[in-house]
Image (cartoon, rainbow, N blue to C red; front, top):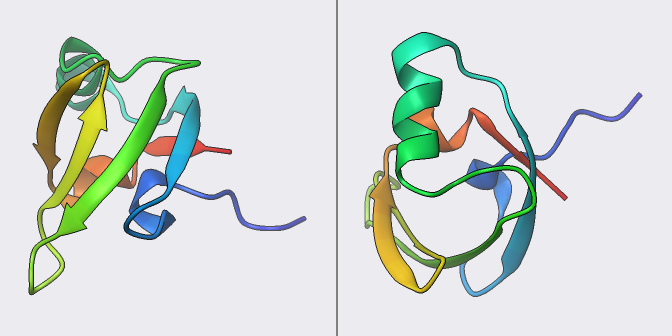
Amino acid sequence: MAEEKTLRDVPVGESATVRRLTGEGAVKRRIMDMGITKGTDVFVRKVAPLGDPIEVTVRGFELSLRKDEAQHVLVS
């Protein structure tokens, strides 16, 4: 079985749809509070020079996510 694709794996300039969140407790709640929920489209705008954070557009606004947070967002 192939490894699941996360938001961290989406290249700059591409969109993905959230399939599910894998974090627990405060991490999962924080991601959901930012508007990243199942079925949401996420566009990766840019990545900082050292790879962290990742800037994304979700529901018409821009967010910065740490790589470890993006790792908890499974996409298709």
